[in-house]
Image (cartoon, rainbow, N blue to C red; front, side, top):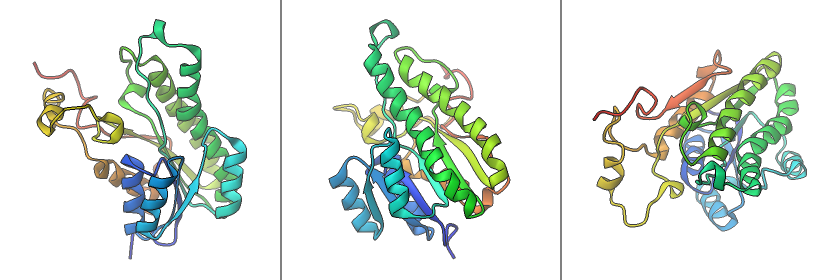
Length: 245
């Protein structure tokens, strides 16, 4: 039997990267997976390959979330993976950019949680998995909007865990370290270039999306039945301390 047999899961940002890897692992573990994204061609292609469902979803829209829940029905697992990053010094970050990052990374998770929680409670509980970042634990130059959003996701996660626990709903945050995805691609870089950038940290390399997906499987499964309100870090040791010199 799969670790997620009988569970219905929505994964946002599932057209590529960590979201795609998570959707693939969930399907392999027996879940009925709904892939959600705005990259419709990519998302549909992945869903068709997996024999899963795809929905086009603007995670910053409350009516869009309501429509998805109406279409899908009962949900056991929500993975709030979709997110964006904008890099600029604080004094050069305009208000529209700051709000766009918060709307996507924080408001999207808030709306998703509100949308699925009533139905989860009626089904006896479930698991909500939010995505923070090492920049949700420590600041970083040029990431005022991103760090603000990822710190806030951890606060949202803890409050939701407290309020939704009586409904049997667990809420946790995944903290992935530097991971090789389309978001982190740098033109002209080779594998050795990517690894060299993190050579001073404990594992000395970037992570693969599948390594983050494995953490999501644990949190989605009944194996994590006593885990809620927590940070689950898979960062190759980035937060363990200062890099080796």
